[in-house]
Image: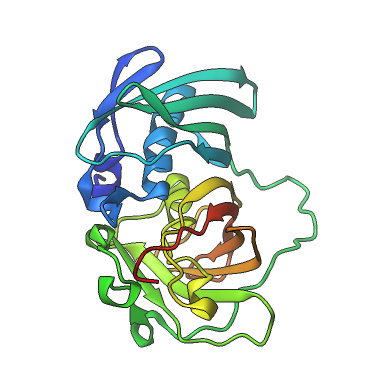
Length: 265
């Protein structure tokens, strides 16, 4: 089954280790490609190289912003191909410079023959998606072309903790099924959680993000909880968790992002 996400994150393979294609403008935030979209583009090439296995874990460093509407090149090589896990390293290159560096592990999410007692973070209580506010350019204060591709709903929930928490729901606008690469995208597609307590502070570009995929989601909306527990020295650390429609934890993430104030703040 084809989807906008699959079509627009798939580059053409031009050699054993290289893929080329144009970055699609429909994934932009404030005129810049969303970091989760860039990550998915690189992961799609890496996944093809290792044989279309499930993403298990990824760490990405963003060196400079991507440029939408222009050609990019993914260079990938397999570091180790084991019987259960394959690990690769890849770069996204635009205008002759490296935009991001990615290391990822792929394999299969197998259930053990002898089931271990499960330890899992349970999902928070949250209003259903239809009772949550749709993410909009107006309330975030920036252009959001990504709205054409991803439907994000933000719950009006307050937290008594010292952290800045954001709760919400997410799905593809065309209701396409979510694979492991979709979970990587969704881990970086919500508004920054720091906005919920401190308001719009400005541009919040990701420096580094790590995502672990724990299960493949069932059909339906994905629930998200993101929180910032460390804001200092012009940067923040945000933790994220995603659950599927049946309350199963499907992904966790952690990222370091800069706080760049704009003239309007």
